[in-house]
Length: 492
Image 1 (tube, rainbow, N blue to C red):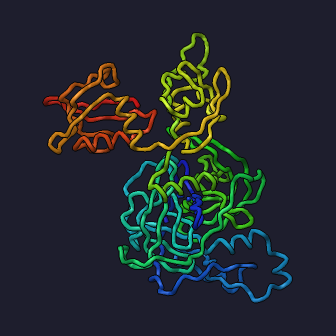
Image 2: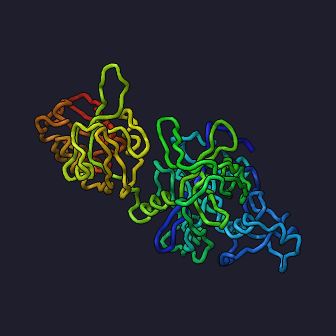
Image 3: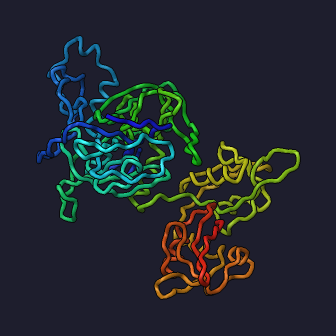
């Protein structure tokens, strides 16, 4: 087994309610060198057992296909001895209840390299089986919905899920979001994923709790697939709440800090309380050493997964303003100054006006424009945000960023009208005087071939690409004028 350690690893497990579509998160794994997993059986999935006592020691030698103890296959004694009863703890009960809903996730093709914000542990090819062990996941709905990390399945051509009872089944990707590193899978019953594949029903699913009432020092449990050892259990306590973690050029907020050991392959595994409820997604480990791990609170993950299931994307929060640096002589920057406020936006309704200086969003200081937008891009639709101004505090509730509405706003800000160029590009027809495009130097007749990573072959493509731009980002456009081509950066 070869593992390339990186600065940090990421774990998340997510769960959603069958009707309310509630949700939670998961982390990336390592290569296994075990023999091929036995073929999946045709037995129907068993109902989630109510495990009331410790494992039978006679079953402790039975291993899962990946080498770990198969908790789901272990049986409980008909009656507990007084000695067993004395050793029975809430942790033992919680593990027995939760274990059947934890899965291992595999890909039959090594994913292409992906951007890795935490420096996840690398993936290695399995020389013996040709498979790659990617991480863990949680069944959050009896119909076969699994929540895991986005980086666990990024670039995978085929995804397979190993259940706790030993069955290995194909899964399809329902939705994923890289920014929050969450993905939702659907387990299929057939060997081939197709329209004719039957749905899985009555799978054991994890009960979802809440992270709103967590206590520092509270006992927590992590279950996952580290180093290919499926259903490995570790426990610890909550070390801190509402941690902000910065990695490279990205920031992640509101993490639960834990001291339970999490390792490569735990990605996608759950963080449980002693009642066996899903309270978080084991997400990252500190590069400085063991004993410092982080998990996404279940309440925030629920919102993200709900969006993926209902809308196919995460609905980010729209505030409706733009800012610039505060320039003050002989003083450090105290915040950012508001330069524009969109009509009808949450910012305008909250009374924010051009000239206001914003020093904090929530409890996080916005001492630079970069820090301001970094914080804004972590706000989801419908969140209430406290904005601290130099003249006082105001509160606003964000609205969803609707692609059509954002396309209209971006089009107005950009100040360009385009037409089709015979299916090859979007041709600039008019440039509004005084607009962003006018100041940059666009001219009628310029051909736009690309916006960000999206190819533009028509006016429809052009306006569709504008709807995908998030406020506060700099977007690159590929523009052709005459015999020359240019990459132009547009601030939105």
